[in-house]
Amino acid sequence: MWTHRSWQGRFLAHPLPPHERLRAYAGWCTAVEGNTTFYATPSRETVVSWARQTDPDFRFVLKLPKVVTHERRLTGAEEDLRAFLDAIEPLGPRAHALWIQLPGSFAPTDVPVLARFLRGLPTTHRYAVEVRHPAFFDDLRALRALEETLGTVDAEWVPFDTTAFFRTPPTSDAEREAWTRKPRTPLRTRALTDRPIVRYLGRDDPARTVEGWQPWLDVVADWLREGRSPTVFVHTPDNADAPDLARSFHREVRARLPEVEPLPDPTPVGQSTLF
Image 1 (cartoon, rainbow, N blue to C red):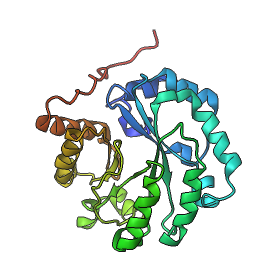
Image 2 (image 1 turned 90 degrees about the vertical axis):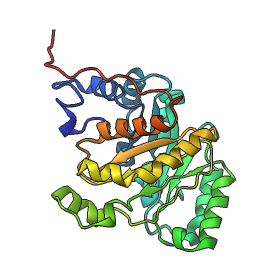
Image 3 (image 1 turned 135 degrees about the horizontal axis):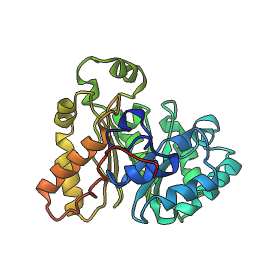
Image 4 (image 1 turned 135 degrees about the vertical axis):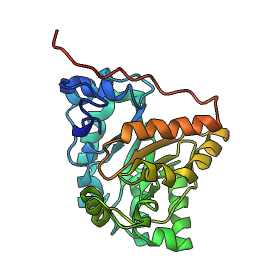
């Protein structure tokens, strides 16, 4: 997600050719969620362009195609999975983790299916799983079964923290739309691997977004002290200020741990020219 319309002219120069937009985004943040891969596997040529626009230590967390996770529900999707893995191969080390987002109907009774799927994946990648069924959070046996399954292949559990978002009723059109679509899952702050991934959803009001992420500052700082390498994605319903908010979160973590590397200085957004 690096071509958000509201970022153009604010965080990214405008107009900017499509093959330069990721490079500009990478001046603001050092990781990105590959959400578009959920809807369609990109061409290898497109992925080569992504690699050219980013440094080797840039982090892509790429979502597996929905045909694998939602339509086939991890069963009989070998051909689609092979096509996806082949397409993203040019990213090399930039493919920080492959993100297996499962539908809300994927229940604890489906964990054996997930276990078989994970065991069949190539070990050349790291994997992170996001579940949304309430039982994984409410039922201790279901939670432990999922953690054990993930642990067998060193896969991470991705929390999607929507607790701050659902704390009070929506106040904008974007918030009202998100209110009907986003999952209401309890806060989870336990990391299973040395590369935890957090997805946090705030509000369109930046101050309320900052207020809501306060518990994560200590969690992330503790992970860093333990030698882990966390990746945190900051969302709001309209995502209008997401790059700036992400940098603010990073600054607050650095205030606790000054030894954390600073983010790059973004290229100033001025009047662009074709020559």
